[in-house]
Length: 203
Image (cartoon, rainbow, N blue to C red; front, side):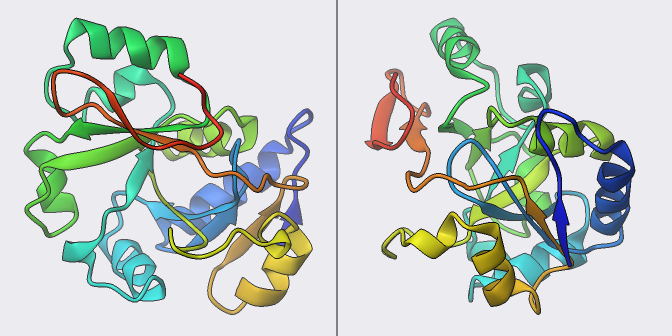
């Protein structure tokens, strides 16, 4: 199902329908401030397993990130944030970044894994932030493509995405044309932040 949502005039009825679908274990494709992404409810194990299946991997081997509504929600899933890292997050988010942080003890249970790290994002996109706000917990997120895939034009066009993925997900949100540049990935698990993939975000 393809639904159109205007970021500057969000239809709350559509957001409520999408949140209900997420709580029922469905997958969605949605806009961010970079490329379109694929996601599900962090608290729904069946949905997490389906998301891993679409990406041809086991959930325990996945490196999915989470989208949080704000920095205080991030702190519920990571170990203590040192002051410089907290300041970096505050300066950079919302924005086109994925910050790799040291996960707390709850995260491995959610992903059936021994994960010690978690990628966190707060995209500068009102549609996805509204969904996370209404959901009441983070959205698990992964890009539509793998890192080694070339970013082609069809990944920015919601109708093209619909043609390719309609049979794999419950809802595809048309929030306008996406971008052809992924987020900047910053590793914050050591004393100094290190850019491990330069993308749209400039630190």
